[in-house]
Amino acid sequence: MLTTEQMWAEIDRIFSNPGLVKGWRDKPPEKALQGARDYLKWADERLTQASGDFTYWAYKGDETLAILSICIFEQQVAGRTEWPELPPVGDFTVAETLRDLQDWAGNIVAGHEHNWVLCVHERDKPPSVSACSTVHDYGALHSACDICGMDRNDRPKVCDERR
Image (cartoon, rainbow, N blue to C red; front, top):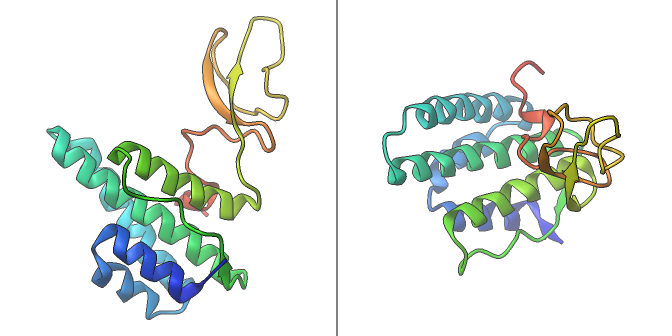
């Protein structure tokens, strides 16, 4: 387990942008949440306008940092002070690294480590993952957690701006 300070130091190392999140960390978590949500909104706007591979992945990193921050601040509001180890970063593609970091954030919010399995939706049958609550067309395949049913492509619910 990591302390809050260790966890933030590791996130600063991964993202090479300590100034951005530090500005939020100096505030109470309740107030920091708004900065992180604004950053997520900004990153989403940039992602939709990204014109090339490099800019897309740069903004995808911004989106991931915002999602991590929102999930962490939500957990701090709830009183959490210890954190699981962050996933290893290094020999993976950018896409895999960002996916693993978003999975980590989703795990801390869900209270369990997601177990991603293939969920199949067939005509006149329930989804193959009994906890799946995602509405898909028949024949759809997607990754879902067999514990809580979350679709792997969904953001943790705490990132929902309407909260």
